[in-house]
View 1: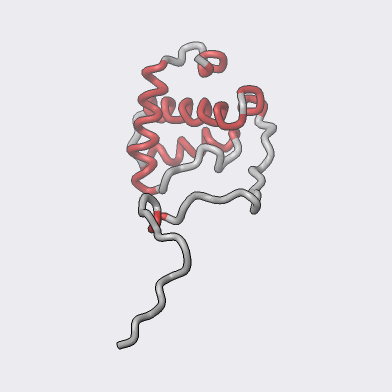
View 2: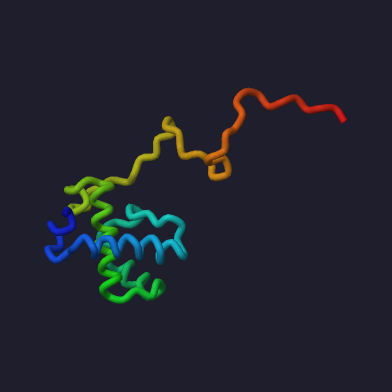
Length: 119
């Protein structure tokens, strides 16, 4: 388990709890929180502050923090996550983005729109 390289006492159940709390509690105020939004060194103080809002116990806050930092390792690669050497994500206009929410899962007709009908 990658987290044990950083925290020898980390367990899978702790990381699972951290993930569940991150999804359940952070989602209450933040829409799909992004673990890459903050630099790694800002997450501990952010978690201390946010733990009060989310009503997390100390062990729960630690579980969420470990989940976030471990997740960053999966996003940026193991070495970069622990050295915090990642660069900002480059947005590439040549790659298509996700579908607009209102069209997600809807089969849209292809081709030109139908001609208007006279009244």
